[in-house]
Length: 162
Image 1 (cartoon, rainbow, N blue to C red):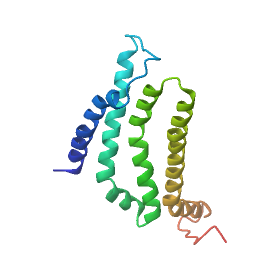
Image 2 (image 1 turned 135 degrees about the vertical axis):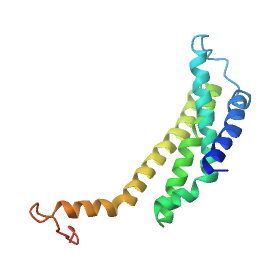
Image 3 (image 1 turned 90 degrees about the vertical axis):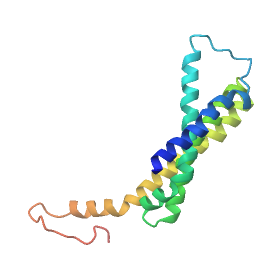
């Protein structure tokens, strides 16, 4: 079976039960009751988050070899990318369910938001750092070519940096 079909299968095997178990594991707070008109929007969002959680688990299982390949031997960068991508995928399901369970408890909201929002920000920054680190050699080659005079198309400067 191809990896993408395995990932789809894992996504569904994990995501569908996650969708069904969310309100059981984190019972909704009675403080906030959505209207019947709001419920479909919340259910669709919950389903998307649960399936994203399932895909995150599938990525965690199958994604490492591809991330290592993209990182071209930069093991530290690969690890940063892998961990960041995995967290960005799996964190939404517990995050949203904790909000539903916590409702308007301000201390709980602060703890949830620091635990999830701050780590998502760190993961995004880590991915941006990894992206620049991986493509820095290509960028330097482009900068080098940009320094060649237009009338010398075969110019091959070795470096623009001293």
